[in-house]
Image (cartoon, rainbow, N blue to C red; front, side, top):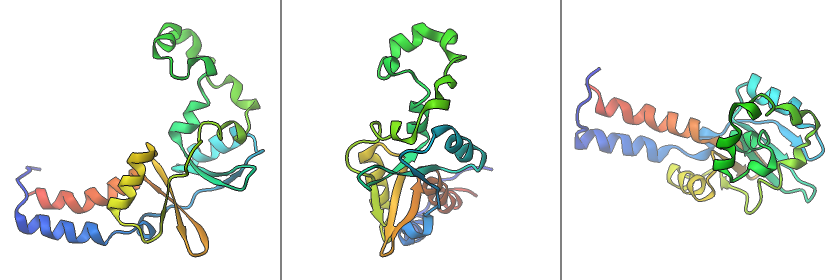
Amino acid sequence: MALRKALPEDQNRVKGIVTMLRAMDLVESVPWADHDDLVLPWLHRVVEDNLPGLMVIDHGGKSHAVGYTELMWLLLPGYLHGQPLLASACGEALSEQLAGPLAELRIADLVPKVTGETAWVPATASVVEIVEVMTRHHSDLVATFDRDGVAGVVSSHRLLRNVMAEVTPAVRD
């Protein structure tokens, strides 16, 4: 399929469609994990059900959207966090042992990684608002709230897929 430069009328059509997208159009349901739950069953569920992540409720009742990056953080021993040279030196010897400690970890072990302000948007948030929150928080998941509470999450994958579905036809023959 040959690509061509988008014409101004194509760009206006795309802008109109993309600007109509709201968080409520992109929201995905994810399971809720309790602070004291074991991690391993949740990891299996997230992977097997192809979910973008899960929501975690901490002891203070605060909710956190937890994506794959935070889940993978659990695979590394603590002494390797933020230590790329040491991780490189460990190499394959440690790779076989990565999942070992997961059987004992609880969801609470995720919360120290998911500190600070929760990445969230209202259900009426525009694509631009969602992207701003994702980039500011370095988060692939953003919790979405409506008047009834948490509606789910918007994942960067779903956001890009929907935006690109509208943009791509504008630049193809």
